[in-house]
Length: 115
Image (cartoon, rainbow, N blue to C red; front, top):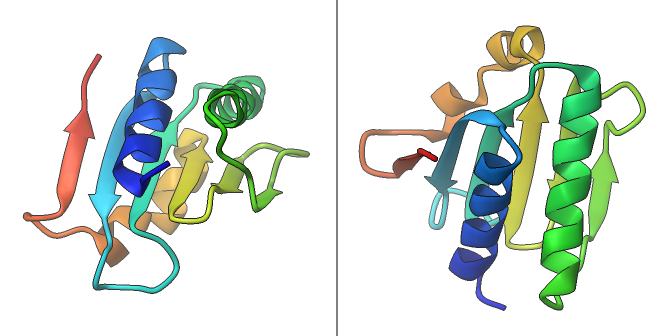
C-alpha cells in the first residue's frame, strides 16, 4: 500500500469517527521518518484512544501494519507509526503545548481534512 493511500484511509477514518482539526502534512524531503504526518484532535482521552484503534483497524484491514504505537495508556497524545505515515492524535491541551504543526508545516505541504 502506498503512503498516500494509507494517509487517505487514516484521514477518512478520523473524520468518519468525529476527530476534529485533522491535517495531513507532506514531510517527504524534510525527514526520513515518514512521507506524511497526520495530526488530529479528540475531545477526551477515551476518544483519542478510540480514534487510534479505529485507524489501526482500518489500515490492518487493507493489509497494512503498525510498526509501533505509543500513548494508548493515558491517551493525552497517541502516536501510531504505520511506517511511511505517522499518526498523532492529541487532546486539546497537549496539542497546543507541542504544536507539531509549527515544526513541520508550511503553506505548501499542509492539507486540512474536512468531513
